[in-house]
Image (cartoon, rainbow, N blue to C red; front, top):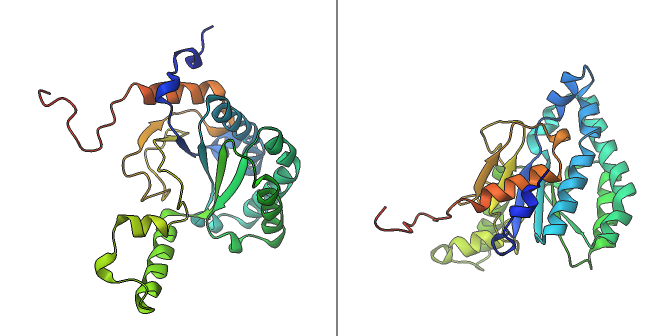
Length: 247
């Protein structure tokens, strides 16, 4: 059986792929299990997508792992997720090092449990000199939260006389975002078939191509990533322009 990978054009590869990893709870419910069972079985999908992006030469992969809204979920599910995060980070540091993956995070990390913060800091420090794929985990993150933080920093700069309101432009805002220094994603993949962006990278996805699949996240594999990238390469990215005036 042929793979979508064979038809991917290496010259049209997105630099940055973002993923809304949705459907863990539904996947577990379909199997008559608790939601945390779905989260545990989603780890392989993360591995597959990370490896796939690395093999294709994609430079940035942002995974929406835990939103600010997720804190309102049942305590046992949140606790289970935090424990899963800690254990996974401990187990996967060697894999990240072996594959030259640099781990970074965006979001309100200080809101996470202390053991999570400690393991995140350890993994980030261990991989800080890696030069391959940069894997960005969005944890305790939301797009609106990020914009509020940026506006607060900007207001403080104005108050301190370091910034004039007349000098505020897109670049000034970009420099204050959690993703400062990271190119906007060209492709956003969402699993589970939901047609919404769920408060994710609201500024950054202004011109991002959206790819929606009905596959639930625990079932997502490299071939699904290849298909998404192949589909992305079939599109014309216009950025509001008309490529052919006759059309």
